[in-house]
Length: 96
Image (tube, rainbow, N blue to C red; front, side, top):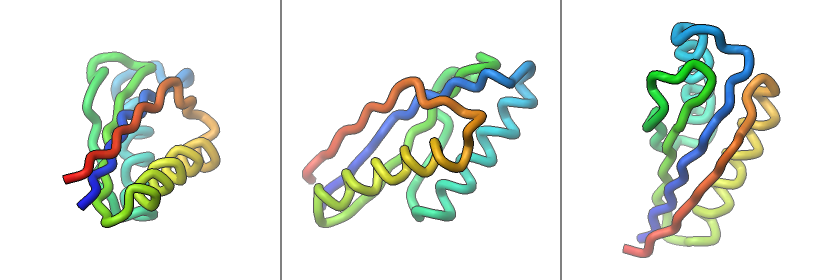
């Protein structure tokens, strides 16, 4: 079993309140969850207006496939949400 996990740091330059941030993050997470059928959650920077950290995980039997899924998620966010900037993307693949 292969577990791929990533922490994605997002910069939200157009957010001026936590309410704005919450709307954008919920939208991003719902789209990614529906498109890729992965686990996703906000994992950090909860009190910052213009920054968010989300965590994603994917389970597979192939480390190559899991790594590709994480890269597809990264590109999907960049392509579908031009108002969101990915400022950091860290991934790890664990063999269980």
